[in-house]
Amino acid sequence: MAVTVLLTTAVLAWLADLGTKHLALATLSDQDPVRLLGGAVYLTLTRNSGAAFSLASDHTWVFPLVTAGVIGWIGWMAVRLRSLPWAVSLGLVLGGALGNLTDRIFRAPGPFVGHVVDMVSLFDPYGQVWPIFNLADSALVSGVVLAVLLELTGRQRDGTRLRSRRSEDAGAPGTATDGSGPSGPDAGPVTGTSGTVSEGSGPVAGTSGTVSGGSGTDTERRDAS
Image (cartoon, rainbow, N blue to C red; front, side, top):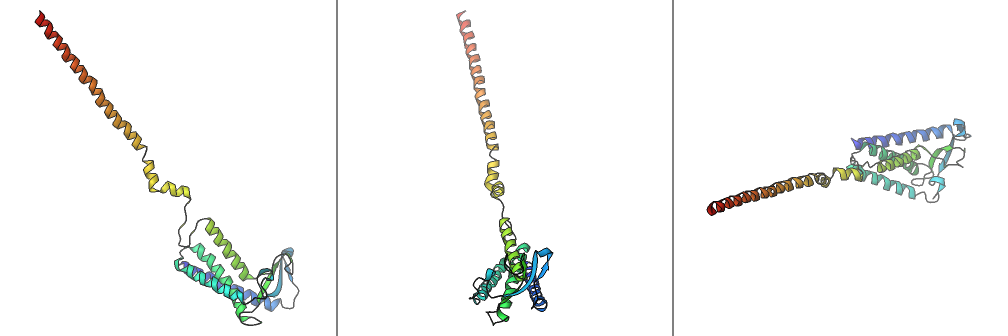
């Protein structure tokens, strides 16, 4: 089930990225930036040969290799995947990686050195405040953020959830033994009480001896008389 969710999320993110890029190329080419939400968002068509902030723009061929490594890692993780939230997270990362990889392989200027189509700019029409990005980038970032949150909340990829140390201590067998410990001290006084009772019988026996001794005294008096 989790693997199905992962693949479905990845395909949807990938198709949505391809669709928005196609729409941007069809409507924003040779057009001025489109201002949305009072200038909070601008639609500006651009092609990026590098990463964010145009980093490594002269080494475009590196990015397909990195993306292939990410895809391979996600495939390896999927073998033991049982968590649906983790499936969504990895699916978003996979879909975003596939979206940009498609551009690197099939767009100009050539295979594995293609430029990625970006179109969303925040607070500035030309990416002066934040790098211009696309839907694949958004899916990647969302997937990574979700993965960090899942790690912080102790959710594991196999569907289990880590307990806090206090919860583990409370549920540990050793704690149950310690919890039964009070009965040990309680049992001790009971045993001691039994000993006290035994000791208490000592004076009784001693009293009996005294009584016997008293009888001996009476006998001696009769003899004297």
